[in-house]
Image 1 (cartoon, rainbow, N blue to C red):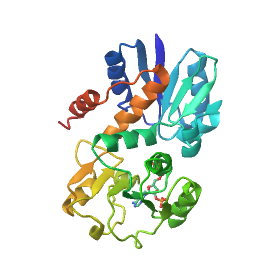
Image 2: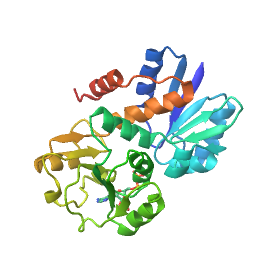
Image 3: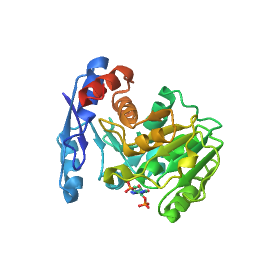
Length: 273
Ligand code: ATR
């Protein structure tokens, strides 16, 4: 049977096996999907061994995405732009193709929530790997403006300079932010420490859409904060998780699974509904 897995550390709580097993059932594809948690300095060896032993493809999660970028034979244009690989496919001619489906997953999830990106004013919080992966797919939707704000301002400036050939992207400090944004995307890891990005409450209004790439059984700290300040449309990263997986599944199997039912089952599994 064709074998796939997700590499990460830690990865025990990954929902990818659950999601891909449902996709396989739904599309009647015969495959198995497992987990691998190599020591941080043993990822390269573990990846080689997996493909030597007949593996067909894998997902890569924290902290291996940047390393995977350097280990594949060929990169898709979107992986090249993202500087990270979250999906590897062994092609029929034996090439390890590195791809990145995170940004496409974010955009697909935003659209499934009815968020309009064209001509919108987007604020992206954070300038790490998650922000980098999101930039090209967001700019491809032709927003009127995309502002990056980051605690370390120079990193936001670097990202804006790197992507400004793709659209109207600029960097501002948190203090400089002003005016009406249509959408705020939190790509920071602040919630992991139970912290909030230092965003002024005045930026939140009733018609703003709030997206947090993090997720949990209850509202993330950022979503709770935004609701307190009047945001009515809030979304967490669970849908992005399912959508990036659907995109990876499509890369591997050439067939696109439906995501709505799988997202519902995942929520039930997590105790969210
Ligand atoms: P990822 O790959 O998930 O994006 P990362 O590359 O470590 O992770 O980036 C984390 C991002 O969250 C960075 O933009 C970081 O800001 P700095 O560049 O200043 O480090 C941001 N971040 C982390 N904790 C934060 C906090 N408490 N407040 C604001 N931003 C925070």
